[in-house]
Image (cartoon, one colour):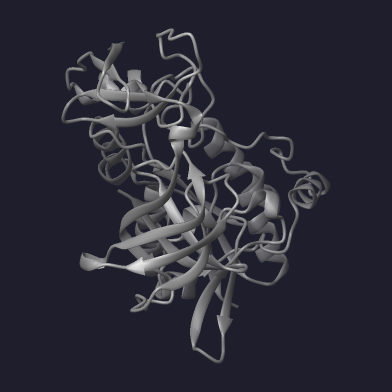
Length: 356
């Protein structure tokens, strides 16, 4: 039977993914990726993934289910491709999604390469997503899972045909409640373990402090301005703000205001009304289409520009340098530079890109 390397975070999803593969007859080995040390994170007292306890949980599950468990040290690669990108993006005024960069550069690149070097046929993860092969087109497709509330396809839009050919998503047809029940019935130590919520290397959520401390770049105060350029007050540094933010601005204008724009060149943060947050268009670069075929004509899709957002009708227009312009049927709230826009055709994930 085929050999599968299962990425195990120590959580319940990847543990049950391994269990499902075992029951299907695959030869399974679990792997936990060590992605950072305590020096890399913002708060060593806060629970985070990839900690020693997570490694121990993954190892305990492997022992219970009867398969080998390994630990790979990808700290250098994670720092280079994920943490550094996170810091540089925030400093330049963007708001990145490090889970996307981790999937792109670590799990489906470095881990896959290591698995192939060691003679494995596939890698597998606990992502809630569907991978299918279309006989008529000869292409692999990525689709939304049975449990729509746990749909993780937004962070998987960068997958290529080759990566999909080598990847299994064992939880595609399971609800989260089923997964926890299976873990409990199997006596797995982590069946009650809560899902991770925050960015793994900034578990306390204090992104600005993390960036200031790790980058060594001086953080300068600047001006809050309105959309006409009028100065409203002083901000403490653009790294401390995100598009759509209302709370914690440290300014009182007698009415609700939101962050609508950040400009790293002028070091300004623009404040406006809720209505000012809406836009119908965006441009994206670093675009990937899972089919491997970049559209030559306008493409009618549904799309979303945030993880928890509902996808809405839009048209994708190919433009120069592999970029696309996306025009939504209805204005979208808080479209943010550095986040992803992901395109769908029904349940099928077509691809996506990084919002400029």
